[in-house]
Length: 323
Ligand code: SF4
View (tube, rainbow, N blue to C red):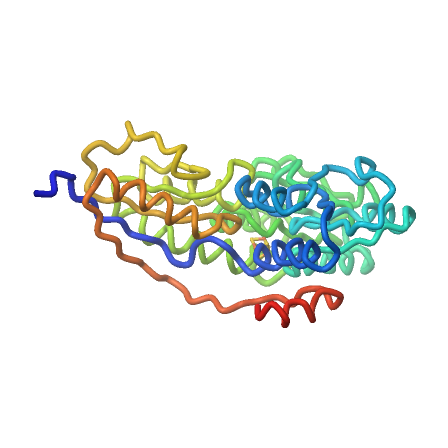
């Protein structure tokens, strides 16, 4: 007789890879296929240790800055998070062959910020200091032209030069609820502020947060598969806790699970950040299946069918590979 305790696992859908992450990984893989190793990548292509390690094994070399790359004809890929304008400028100055894996939804925010700047707006960026996407978005414009706002508290202390010319843009991977509060606080203080209809949080971040909100109140514990540097994965843990699930944790993979948390629980929810591969979700489910008699179901709150084009120079390969 099966002595394992019963455990109901609810998988959140959508979860895991988004179109921007999928595209960025494809760009590195196709570049390796077309040009051979090494392919240099500036910054972790996406914030997942397992993805980075897998690409390193295939011949990708990860660096933080271009000056770590020797003189080379090898391609240099910019990560999905986007880069300040100075980075492609430096790459051109060094005659580097670069491929830009910036997610098109991040590029859209760059375009928005630039348009506001050209129209004479003073720009507020809602985001997290130091995150590469924030560094990239601020780096689209001259130093000093963008003010970073991280919290509602920051809004209270913000003194614009001219409140009638304000505009805001946001990081794509923020908490939908926190950002709504910050935008409301900005609109309350500066009614003339210009901005996107809602905010710039992307479809993937929004959908993953919605699905975890639906599942978290119905389970005793939640696991979000993702790496600690992944902004959207961290937000999923916060959203789960706020939705009423006390035991919500982020794990990179099954080997990191702290089994002391789970004991006799009867229900578990599982989601994954936009940079976490489905194989790691499967690994987590298998680890639970080895200890519990699991029954797995899926709660789907949205359907996704978005895909982004990869750079032209890699496109015939993509067709040849049947992708
Ligand atoms: Fe693009 Fe959103 Fe994915 Fe980031 S999380 S890569 S913005 S789709």
